[in-house]
Length: 408
Image (cartoon, rainbow, N blue to C red; front, side, top):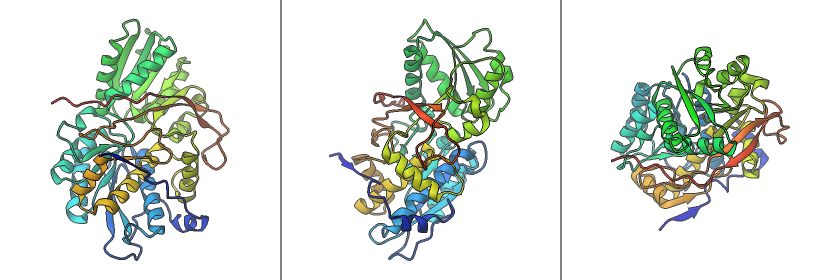
């Protein structure tokens, strides 16, 4: 029988403990001198390559949770240790890294996957090894299969689940012309197919999709291809690294229309687009930035991390992964298969999330509610944004999304 867990809600610490935890943001945590062998958790994420801004956030969020749990005495007297590996935003390196984490380091779980290409490669190994693997922003539908039991989404749902809220927003604004730019890799192609399927239900809305390389930063050609359509909104959801440049370059070309992003770090967009993004760029995420729980955790994160100026939902997901694994170890022991079983049998309330964490039997988010926020001018609540005065403004939190069921 499924019951609810309040994972992470007891993680508030005294200020002195926070200062002890602020050890530099993301280095591997030692065993801290606790009783017994440390419980090793793998952080496999993108610390170089196209998805570095996402990966650095994930790593630091996971390390903050490790530090806070260890300050409270660990799990049954054992300390947590974060073992960090860089997948370099490449599937082949992700494959080698997860094998090292499982076979050599003996981790009980692995979290932090950003790239869908990496997710496709590593999920197969996690399933074969029966070691829990947590996806953060790897949303290609093909990562999970009907037989998946050890792979779990945590923030970004499968691409088909993302397209529906985009269409809902378009219809709520009575728009009839929508342009989209997607990246030519697993996530971008998944979003392309999902958008095409979703918009078939709205024949009065014209949709034009352009496909660009994943590393592209000059989108002039693709934006000019949209000029004849004269779009009322541009969807950059399928091209995560391009969200900022698309925002700036579309304005330069006279597209004074809303831009919808791709679960992209807000600070990354603001750093690149600056004022061009304000009151124009909107993006999806799993963080409830209006909640006091999110804001309290954001202050702790910024006091800890030397690498980040804003608490992105990637860091929130990393924090949640560690807190859930720690609880599972405390309840079921450190056998990875037992941890996976505990995860499937429970519902978790992660502080700052826009939805409860629970999964279908194949690891899809069972009750995801996507937060859709506009980059507003602020001011931000005190202490929650060291990157400027801007702050996300809530447009909507979706109704619970129907979980995507992978084809047999």
